[in-house]
Amino acid sequence: MIGTPLQCFGRCNALAVRLERIVHLDSMLVDWHFFAPTRSELEEELSDLRGALLDGGLEVPGLETANTIDDLEDALYNVAGDTVPALGFLVKARQPYFQIEGERLGYSWEVSRSQWFHALTFEDAIEKACIWGQAFHDEAWTRARGRR
Image (cartoon, rainbow, N blue to C red; front, side, top):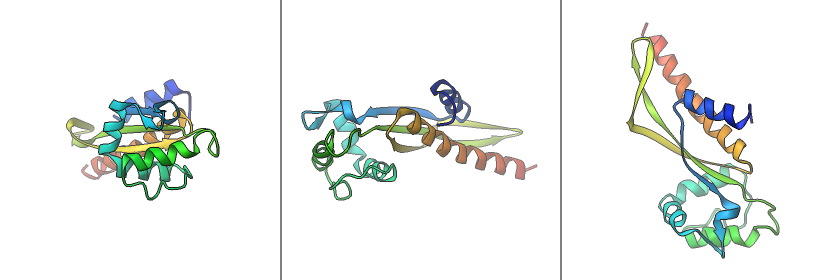
């Protein structure tokens, strides 16, 4: 992580990255299932979540083939606390598409992109979201400078 959590939140603000959802897997996975409101949201984005967990380096048998929320819960619960000491955090970040307005970048939240990230610590998950947002921010500035 680069900086303190407060500095990371400042970076999120500067890059127009909004943290929409924060899921601490270890505390949300109770009695083999996710907490109900969280479960339904995760179920809707299962493919993206599975990708984020795999990209985040979580090595859990059955994770790659988890096609339902039940499969995902079983795979995570089977290793929680035993073979994997901590499951970590899932963070969903959103960033608007930038519009070039003269010498500055503008944006509207009406059109945006989102991405899930996984890391063992909350700070590292935020850092991944900031790196993701920074790439789009830099690309927009490159386009803006090319118009001059």
